[in-house]
Amino acid sequence: MIEKEYFGFIEFNLKQKAEYHKNSIKLNCARQAINYIIKAHGYKKVFLPYYICHTVYDALEVDYEFYYLNEDLTPKIKPSALKKDSAFIYPNYFGTNDSKVLQVISDYKNVIIDSTQAFFHKIKNCDVVYSPRKFFWVTDGAYLNCSKKLNLKLEPDTSYQRMLPLFKRIELGSNAAYQNNLSNEDEITNSGMKKMSILTDKILHSIDYKEISEIRKRNFSYIHKKLGKINEMKIEISKSDVPMVYPFLIKNDKLREKLLKNKIYIPHWWKEVIKNVDKNSYENYLSNNLIPLPIDHRYDRKDFDFIISNILKK
Image 1 (tube, rainbow, N blue to C red):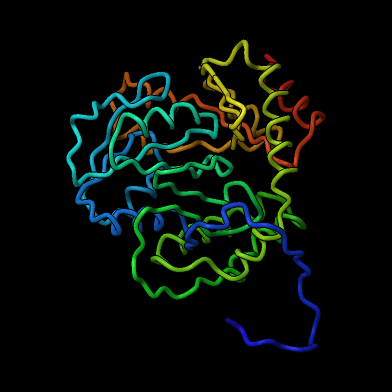
Image 2 (image 1 turned 90 degrees about the vertical axis):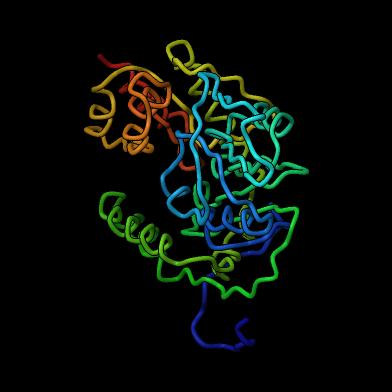
């Protein structure tokens, strides 16, 4: 902790409010939070879906094995295939998967719920990992709930050096800050396990979580009314779901490029999945055709009308 200082230049005024995951362990990133849970339980192996970001399995410090998903995003693998010393990772995909998460917790043992896309979904009696930087204006950090604690003395991370792309985007736009953001990703990958930084912690204490969750739900509902009939993904959202994105699934090879020309930047999630899975698998289809539409607090109906009109334009 920094000793109390007086006067000097004026710092950011971050009003401190209630923390959303106030009783959780706070680390520097979600992939290390998963490693924390694995170490705490002494798991020797991890089962995880093919449809997941490579940063998760690249960071694992134990053996791992992939499993396929059904088209409703439930696991194809049988619970009997798992051993006692194996962990089972299941993501809350898109933040719209709360009901399936609860079913997985009921059916499988040693479950780790990857809630990096479902920050607002609070789960009891299960190990779970959250990634606030996918939802808020922080560059790192993770919350985790784990039934066992490790006796580790971790150094705190520092985040000030990673704030450049956030500030740069405000003045110069997303494209100008893109490479800086990629550099941040590389730094986080190589940073190892640390405590959440003081800066990230303070920012996360300053957020109006109720307002942001309501905006996300409202935006999701508005897009779904416009695109739901042509969306190949069957969405069964519950009241507890606060989505990260609107998962728009449609076979249109030219759509992403068309949106890009109108400065609508849609991430292409997990291209590496294609290399790992069968060509006819659902995972391959998702990786090629999913358009994850952001629905966060930056945008309103006028923005979405523009985006949707470009999607529907022939």
